[in-house]
Length: 340
Image (cartoon, rainbow, N blue to C red; front, side, top):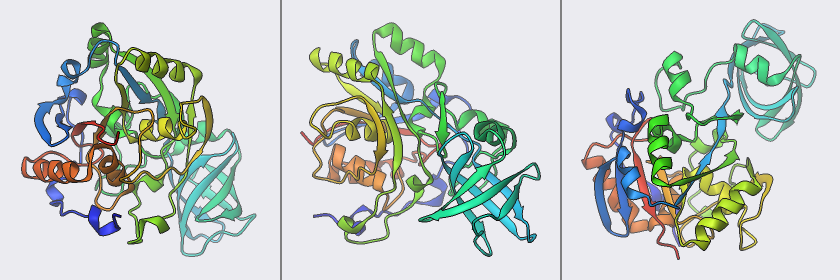
């Protein structure tokens, strides 16, 4: 049984990528299969996949979810939209000297008002005066991760989205997908690699470290996902042909595995709080493309379950020594599951 301290490691601050590389596919790629580590370039992914393999991608789009504003009292407020509930209502984190009470109005971005509703755990419901998506896109700021030390600029607004982003609703990017550009996708398609899309709206909880040593006591954050029938059909076809089902990112993997809890993948939409730790048996995904994750994070636990605890420890030590770039704007890994 693993505990929280088993997933800690020392990461030099200079290994945290603060900006994306000029070219998306110029990242490095660490290939890990069992105890075998190979240093590659991300563009090598074309040679590492076979015709008929299936790439499953998360087509969520990151919202400009961060706002600064003022309460009616004049107090300063910072708002981070966590989830859009409907076209007028959101759940949001609200940082202020005093929490707003139901009925309080907050002026955001000196552009429009929202009305605070009831509290929902750590979040507040906020009612917008117009269409949520239009107001967020027009007046919000892109919410870069907390370990990136600059405010989002126009380059970030382009590069902190995947080229295939489509469904608005995330507050963090599915970062494994950031390495793909249109030219690389075209090369993969020309080779005969297939594509399927799921949606999982990544929440801010993805950056939260686990704070309890006993992992059974951790309350996993929830995220909304959709697995369409087209993706289910594509997975079944790949498996029937003996081909790999490759999740692009832990978010795609969590969507697929959440929809596979009956033992087989089924289409649908739901909240997921699936917490994957070593010992989990993967039901659908056979390979995983992912970035390097934070110490003590649920995502580090997930990849340790997927590729093996000791292989991941060795791979991360190798990546640090070899000066790989870590986290959202960093380099990638290609993992093969060892859990079967």
